[in-house]
Amino acid sequence: MDINYFGSRYNQVDNPQKGTGKEGGGSICETGGAFRKKQVAELASLKKCHEDAIDHHSEEVNGLQKEIECHKNKIQKCKNDDD
Image 1: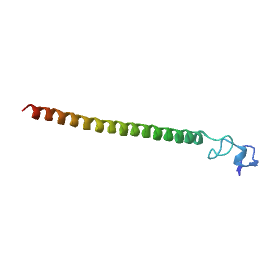
Image 2: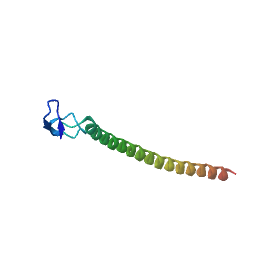
Image 3: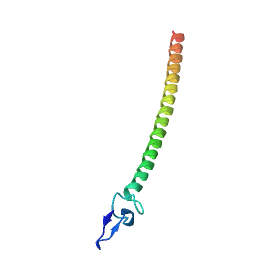
Image 4: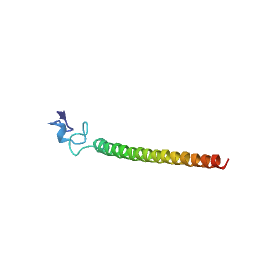
């Protein structure tokens, strides 16, 4: 309880601008926390999306490298057959 300008006592709930911001209509900090949580979740989702794309492209690269080796072996075999 606090004492107001006129000397009467009142609770902080009566004064939404006083205190931690949890009384009355809420605070920007609380709202900012919700936005921050959403932002963190979106960034985590974006990071996972990029990691999945990297994995997919790495698998493609590995497959293409195997194909390159296969073609090199075929070229080598053709060279050996010509001799």
